[in-house]
Structures are given as C-alpha cells and as structure tokens.
Amino acid sequence: MHRHGYKGRKFGRETDQRTALTRGLMRSLFKYKAINTTLAKAKEIRRPAEKLITLAKKGDLASRRLVIARLNDQLIGNELFDNIAPQIKRNSGYLKIERTGFRRGDNSEMATISFVDEIKDKAEEAPKAEKKPATKKEDK
Image (cartoon, rainbow, N blue to C red; front, side):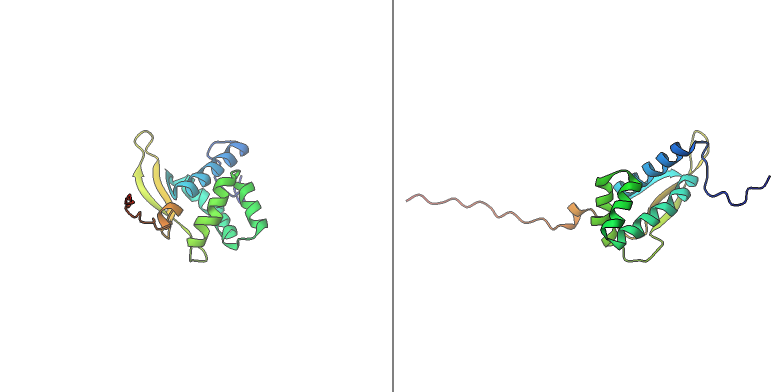
C-alpha cells in the first residue's frame, strides 16, 4: 500500500489524543515562549501554531474566537492576541526549531521550539515607576 495524501504524524495515538497533545504543546509554547520536546512533535506543532499566530496578527473578533476555540484556553488566547502578536514584526516564519541532542532513556532526538523574534512579557515591558522617598511632615 502507498501512503500518499496522509498528512501529519500519528505518534501512536488516536485522533482525540493527538488533538489534545497538539493543543497542549501549543498552549505551553504560547505561555512559556519556548518549549523543549521531541523533534517530531516540534515539527508537527509548528504549522498549526504559525497559523494561530497569523490569525492573532489579524486581530479581529472572529480571529480571536477561532484561536480561543482551537487552543481551548481563553487566557492564553488573549495573551497571544494582546502580548505576543503585536511584538512580531515578520509576515511568516515566526517559530524556529533548534535540535538539542538526544534523550537519555530512549535516544529520541530532542528539540527546542521558540519564537524567532524576542518576545517580552507585559511585566518586563512596562517601566517600573520609581518610588520617591517618603518625606516627614514637620509638626507645628
């Protein structure tokens, strides 16, 4: 038999488990800005994650609802729209995969998937207001 036209890797899981795995990896990627996983999983989540980033860059309400539905997480969907997408200046190729070696137990090739551009958290972005030293009021 031939294997023409079959997209994606199966990872030895059923469809619902594969979908949950992909969603979980994408949520972790958007939450932590980089994750360490197997090379096959990193390659597999790159395409749908980049599609979600493109939708987030579009920025309209319908796109926001699609992204939240695909991630199954409203907080991370909003984080993607409000924090990550505005910081990305390129039109495509948002993610990079770097090979990091082999896993000790089963010798599986490991990789780190992360953003090409540096993504800063909102807490780091906002400049902290300097506190003035408290002055004592003089008693009359």
